[in-house]
Length: 299
Image 1: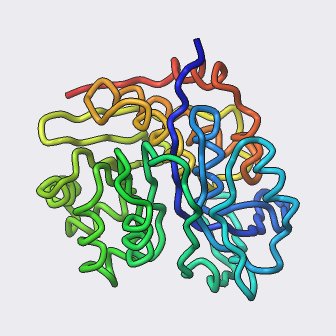
Image 2 (image 1 turned 180 degrees about the vertical axis):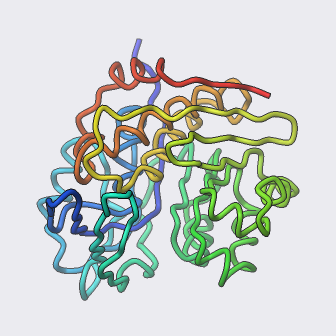
């Protein structure tokens, strides 16, 4: 009997990254929140990506993704340059952005005609007005998961609050939670849970993550990667694992425990290669095996 593969749509950036780490440089490798999300969700779901690239983006890379069942029909090509990000990771783990351009990252993507209503929509960390527009255009997915970044919370709080009220699950990192809650993470969680949202997840990097609902919390440990090659994209890969698990069920407590395990696996896996390569190579059986390494606590 063929296992059902949920239909997931993911909005985010598509970029060409230059990564410097440990004296090694990789130039113009695939990056961006949409691609890390899609690569992590792909083993478990049917993924359609939404994003924008420039005319300089290599079409062969989109063809490669399509061949491995990542639907890129929602990645629009617009005049101008593709979003590029140049970063150096220092020996102490500090990340220094050396250069960036965001011309295509803040443009509304075209929404392809979807054959079926998606089981889940992931709104990656882009302009809240784009997130709201995509949500309106996609229709009524069964599950809406929202990601953000400090810039939108700090400078576009009103727009951010509008989109939050439409989300079932909201993802924050520790800095974003501190900003939203004026230093108090629990205050940030309570603010969001006052609306429609069922779960708020705070990611603590190598310290794991915690999902909060009105009644319960689910904590997961991080998995030690086999090795660290490139720390880029771990948060978006975490989201891909999480959404692919929740899209197949619901946001009940038991489903969140499974989803948080898978999210931890995919987040750790992302750092084991440059770009999305390690995520594209993992099988479902390998991912499930690694999930046994994750410690889950419910309180």
